[in-house]
Length: 141
Image (cartoon, rainbow, N blue to C red; front, side):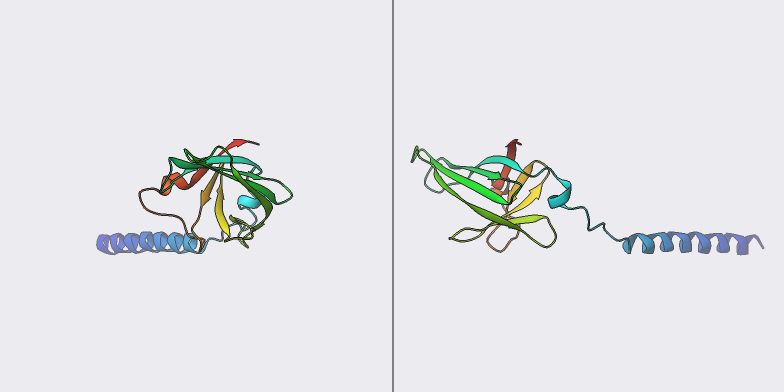
């Protein structure tokens, strides 16, 4: 009798654990909250990007609420005049990444809390030992 109660207790416990795990796996993520509508993303971001033949590239991006931007590159140690471009940017369907619309190749960023994470040309995170150098930090609202 005690053995049956013990076995029943174990089975009930396992069923509760498995049921709760199954429930969590099917949990729906709230699609209404993303970087676009949940973060204070408008503002100016700055960082120093790696450079093969200079000390670094000072990269400054200003994002405006009307989905326009200004992008500035300064090649440190090579030039005192930054290269400046501006245009519009577009959000991805998930509202987590932006693409700067430019005449050249697209520049993509994942938008985080007070940070822009530059992505590769295919929209994937940059990896490797220099990955942290592709993060821009917000300096002004």
